[in-house]
Image (tube, rainbow, N blue to C red):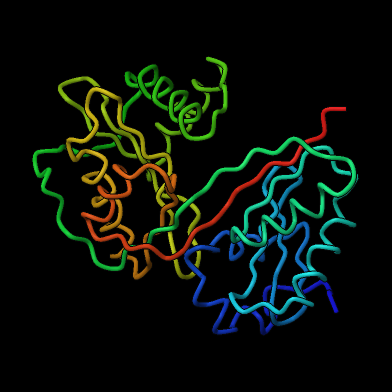
Length: 270
């Protein structure tokens, strides 16, 4: 039976859930102030913080077929009248939910295949000449350009100049945002975010094209990871599963695979 739960529910101490804690660290954030938080009590959790953000679905690796059917049917009935639905879940669950929604009125589907990596021990980067620092106000245009290109390359998302400049302004004032420069040229950006009791994520890692495959992404990720580890937490990042070059650079500084995750957007255009 699916019921509303809170952050103190016993399922959050379930060994199957704790095994997936890096991959589903966002649920740890959602449970603090949920818009929706439901579960069958043992095999799955559905969490939502805002109508604008993805709905996160954790499921046990050994979820039973009856629980899988219950989850998908409940999800469909809750969200079938929603025009745009964003979901993050294990690939098999995403596939089941998409099938459920495709039986009637067929949605447009965008899927992003992610790999979750975690780091509990940093391997020093070979790029030891990289100078990592916080940006200043003179860097705002370069940061805006990096953010705009990152969103386009990673999520196929178009940003206006105003949106990218606003994001850059917030980044400059973010103590967890870092850059690597070559002289006065920003070549790599990254930040830490989404702190939970267990993990801190590394996000927005972007290197401009002419400086790629030279170790700069690994250097900035290693630097941020060391900061995270000193807080007694695990560093986590999500990558494009097909971007073998960046995945290799993260593994070179100590990250290991801890599971795949699919992000899907279902939308109805008519």
